[in-house]
Every structure is written in structure tokens, then in C-alpha cells.
Image (cartoon, rainbow, N blue to C red; front, side, top):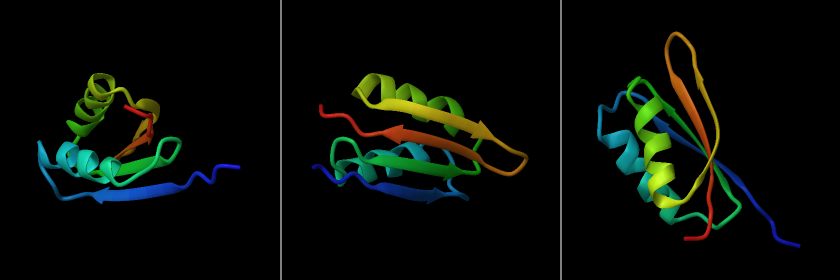
Amino acid sequence: MVCMSHHVLDARGLLCPMPVIKTQNEILRLAPGDTLEVIASDPGALNDIPAWCRIHGHKLVSTHRDEDDVRVRIEVCAT
């Protein structure tokens, strides 16, 4: 049985393109099937991270925006 794990990346306080760069660096450390939740204060991350996922073949699980932060959940796929 494969053990998948969930990780959280706090990218609050960072401006574009840093949330995407931090996301990319974190995903490189993870295994296929792992999930990563990115929390960012830059509202652009709500568009930038899903676009990055499409380009790099990772699955966008969910996006959420509240008054302070955006949250993007990604499933790491084999590339």
C-alpha cells in the first residue's frame, strides 16, 4: 500500500511570482499522490498556481478565497 501525505505551504506575504516558485520547489520534494495546500495572501495566486498546474501536469483539487487568503489544493502527479 502506498502512503500518500498532505503538506501545507504558507506563502502569505509573498508577491508574484514567489507563491508559484515556492509551490514548484515544494512539489519537487513530494511524491506522486501527495497533496499540497498552498495558502497565499496574493490574490493572483488563485490564477497563477492553477495555470502552473495545467502546464506541469499536476491536478488542481480545489481553490478557495476568503477575505484574507487564497487556498489552492494540488495533487502531485507523475511528470
